[in-house]
Length: 193
Image 1 (cartoon, rainbow, N blue to C red):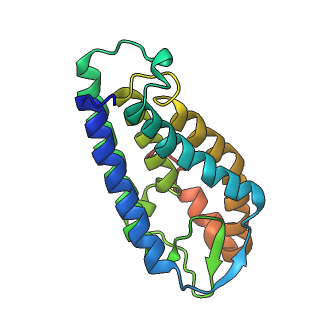
Image 2 (image 1 turned 30 degrees about the vertical axis):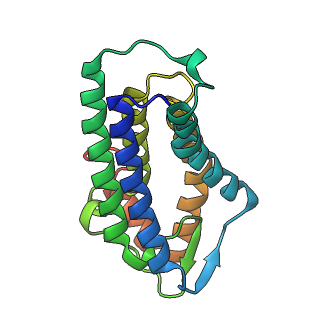
């Protein structure tokens, strides 16, 4: 077992992440979907995120299989990584809280879906993706391993570039000019950009 202090911080963070995701998944499980763009590729993207955020870090922490990819990282980076991860967790939770029942793990809209433009969505169209990037940066700073540490950043980048065009297209199709105008007023990932 490779249970260093940065690994414990990461494990606590990913546990909070799973609790938040699980709570909203359970809350929205019975919502009837009226629009679904959940393709096989969409599900593969979800699996690759889970692999990068949970499976590979678990392999690093609980086995020695990835020790060959370890590198030195000063302890100060772990403190910064913990802070970045905390910020990512807050944004992840806030994104779910602001969406409420308008959230789905894949590209789906329920029959009572509303365009959410308040809370963090007032400043960002995609705060959930932004939170994934923050969590991935935190992971890279907490897990000094080329495979487990950087996997989430690669997986999140792939998710963002493949899924985002489909998500934006679905939102324009479903919400029309309301979404087009919202898109003109907000940035995708970085507020005030």
